[in-house]
Length: 324
Length: 199
Image (cartoon, rainbow over the protein chains, first blue to last red):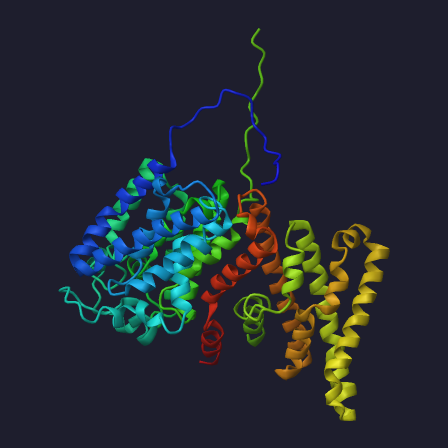
């Protein structure tokens, strides 16, 4: 590392008491409801994917840190969080080697090569997912309609966004918004449990682990742009409610886009970032080859984060008064 | 409307750097600092546009009428190299700070495959003159966009603890790969937009 010109302000310095371990465990707790719902919907397969993903993430992190001769930091829980988030956006039927490759790409290439925790320019879990998605031979494993054909879950087994992509918005009348909200839809293991993701996300906001600007403006951006599309052509484009309640938008707003290493710092940066993620999601859903654009939208916005951090907040200069 | 699709397509979807992998050497060479990246980006926009105009004229006014199509590559290299020398002299005279900032990389535009690639693509795709100019400006802007994004990320890498073996160009190439991964998200967009306009 080069010697840095970092400015240290005069004392006293107050530590908030937050530790990386604490932050990671808050995220794990917040995801617990979605994990339980996922396991109860898809059974042991979901448990297998979740456990193997967390295990892979932690093993790869430990191995690569050993190889790079760095202190092994898997006990801070950040690798476990990456593994869990990755598992929750995968379908329950993915084989083990896909999970392993995705975690390798995320943890080793996406995170540790850049210097580990906090230095990753992109969210590692999303890097892992995107590597699997763009590999032609493996893309079928992430096609929810194909992957989940053998499961009997008691609700309509059609991936709503695939129906939208193939047949347009007029074919969506049999999706009930309440059912979608309660998580009765095909999708990732945990990502489909919309209401539980929302509860977990709000817990993180209340705890101060993530900041409220990103989720709020993510959802606002999604709603605003899909609303504009919907008003121009109601037969081709679905409404804002449908877009917010399907696919990865909810998990994207609270968990995928809020990774602390790859999201902005200042308030206006956060606003622009959130709106950008939401709007890009709708653009990709409408026009790209992928039925759900959330992951790529977050990745693209991650690239812009260093530029967004250049938007500085106006800071009040503290007044200096004499004591006399 | 077709022009808007052409701009979006060459700026983002078929980004000359991240989707077609042309011009990687200046991409890695000049993306370490933001001001160098912006200077290089502007130089590429300028050179690439002029080069495409000139090579378009060479192709349609010289090579095609004389039937010496096989000299295309050679003549394009000659034209582009001469142009870059001109730009270099111009900058040395009128923009000395930029000239010193770019240093070795301005002559490198001579061998920048992005410039050559764009010139050849315009001929191969049989664009009209206006389409060619729009394509050239949008492609070069896409190059600049990628360069600026890369510079932002690499400025941060300066203060992070990158493993010893990966410092410098290695991590730059990994970053470029991950950027290309993110740009995969645009796949299929140009076909969808074209269909939208036609309907």
